[in-house]
Image (cartoon, rainbow, N blue to C red):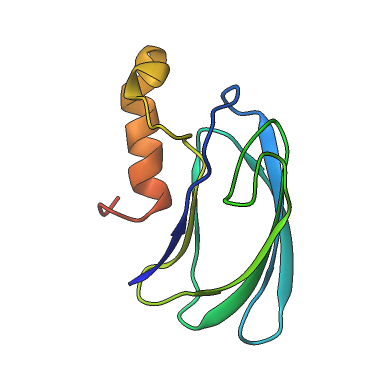
Length: 113
């Protein structure tokens, strides 16, 4: 299906919380700064190498603010970076819950537009 990556901890909505570098199977590299509260989908059907540099206290499995470098498998769904925080608390988004749900569905192409 693919790889989903979701860090522990929470941050402020829309705050930049990590930088990632993805080296795709075609050797193309892309770098992104990602914001808390969003889900990101990177379409990759094969293996990719991902480097994540977190800040704002996020933990991607190596400790808070610790850099992570891993090979991940894409698959049918691709590579998903889920920055909604863990534990996931939908009450955190109570002010704009409907808009956030629609944005998350759209980012993953769950429903046709």
